[in-house]
Each structure stands twice: as structure tokens, then as C-alpha cells.
Amino acid sequence: MKEAKDTMEWSQYSVRTDLAVEAHQLAGNAQGTAQIPGVDVDTDEEDGIRVTKMKVKDEIAAQMIGKMQGNYLTFEVPGLRQKDPELQDKVARRFAEELRDYLNLPDQAKVLVVGLGNWNVTPDALGPMVVKKLFVTRHLYTHMTDLLNDGFRPVAAVSPGVLGITGIETSEIVEGIVQNIKPDLVIAIDALASRSLDRVNTTIQVADTGITPGAGVGNKRKGLNKQTLGVDVVAIGVPTVVDAVTIAYDTIDLLLKRIEQEVPENQCSQLFGNFNEQEKKQLIFETLHPLGHNLMVTPKEVDQFVDDIATVVANGLNMALHRSITPEDAAMFLH
Image (cartoon, rainbow, N blue to C red):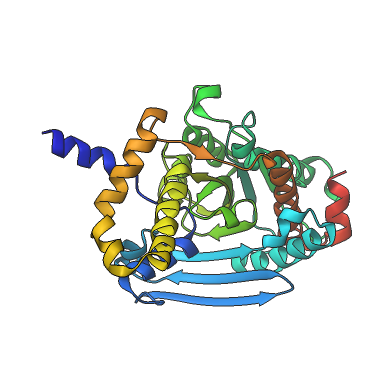
């Protein structure tokens, strides 16, 4: 019984990620191949902006990488940590171009943007911060139609909060709004978890598979997707935290590789033998168990990082959803 219980507890200490590019890489490493059957990957890099388009084509591939069937669009920009306004502007423009093609919406399609997360907790406040910076127009189509030309569309936005603040499941709030305003598309924005510190606050992921609020920190709620809402759902996420398990796991691997380089192979085998996955989990379990099972880590500069990336996402969304908004207009809305 004790052995079974320990195994169950150790299973909580697995290396996880919300990013499809990382899940694909992890699966490839496990299979000993760079390409997973049933997954198409196309990558382009220009001006420090790496764009990866991934299509998970079947259920077998989805199970192998642990992500749902669908299309994933990922932007990786390490330079975003440097607070470079020129680079932020370039990323927002590229994000808008790619997102416009990705969504392929009719000109007058109605869009509801949902900013998920807790506005009182900075690493979880990405969604509400993006919503604050959006150019919303749905009300103008009722009261001030003469101000809008063909380059705009009806856009509404809401930050529903979290269960601990409202006492209402996020999915219940969004379902009620969708039933009333009947959008053609829901865009859900949320903070994610990465397995790599390098990708925290420097990566944007777009997915047409919907989203499960709280999944990144192991607090899954009812999903927001076409099955639950009756309308297409596109998820936009940015990793703002890393699971402590990931850091511990990578540290053990790095330490073992360094020892293997410095210590003769026969001595290394005598010291460590075959240090397998179960033993790694045991070490992580013993280290993190007193602290709880869900310790998340974020940079100390997270306030500025999240504000900067929220600005990039909001600028890109404003330009992607409204053809008449120029980059200069997009920047003006944020002041």
C-alpha cells in the first residue's frame, strides 16, 4: 500500500508544459526522433522573432505529445526581456499579421475576448491586463455607428475573474455571455506554464483547441471550447511561470551530465549506477514534498514583463481584429 501511495504521489512530480512546441520536443526526445508522426511543424525566424506553425493531425499524435488535435502558432522572442520598444512594435506587427491569417474571419464577424486569470496576482493577470488595453467596439455599433468604417468589427471584452473572487465558475460566466451576445468567435487569453525559464514572458502561443482555465498551475476548471460554448474558441497564452519540478528535474540532469564529463565512466557507474526516472522523481519528491505539491516560480521582474507582453498582445489583437487600426493607432490606444 505504501509503495502504491508513493507512486501516486510521485506522478504529481512530472515535467509538464502548456506549450505545444515544448511538448513536441519532449515527445521527440523520448522517442529519439526530431519528428513525431502525425505532427507537421514549420518554423521561420526573422529579426529575432521565431514563428512555429504546428498542426497535430490525428489522435495518435495528440496522445504522443499530450496536446489536443488542432493548429498551434507560437512566437518566441528572447529579446522581449530587454524592454526594447522597437522590438515590441515589430513583434506586435508580426503577431497581427500571422493572427489575421490564422483567424481568417469575415469582415463583420463578432468577437468576444475573454481575459482569464486573477487580476490581483501578477503572473496570473495577463488576461485582464490585455482586456484593459483592447479597443472594444460592440457598443458603438448600437450607439455611434457613424464613427465606424468598414475596417472595424464588433468586439466585446470581459475579465470574468476567478472562482475564489466571484464564487462563480469562469465557464458559467462565459457561457452566459455567449448565449446573450452570440459572438462568432471567442478569444480566450490566459497565463501559461512553461518547462523552460528561457520562454517565460518571451513566448506567445495561439491555439484553436480552446483552453482549460487554471491548467497551467494544476488547478483545472471546466474548459472553454466549441463543445462547451457552441462557438469556435481560440486561445492565446503566454508562459509567466515555471513549475519548480521542472527546475529540479533539469538541475539533476545537468548535474549528472557534468559529473559524467569530469568523472571516469567506471567511477561514475560505481557512484550512481543506473540513475533512472523513478529515482529522479524520488529526489524531487523528497525535496519539494514539505513545500507542497504545486510550487510555481516566476521572475522577480514579473510586473514589468507581464505589462510589456500584455501590451504586445493587445496591440497585435487590435490590429488583427480591426483592419483600419495602424500600428500608430494601436500604440495610441494604450496611452
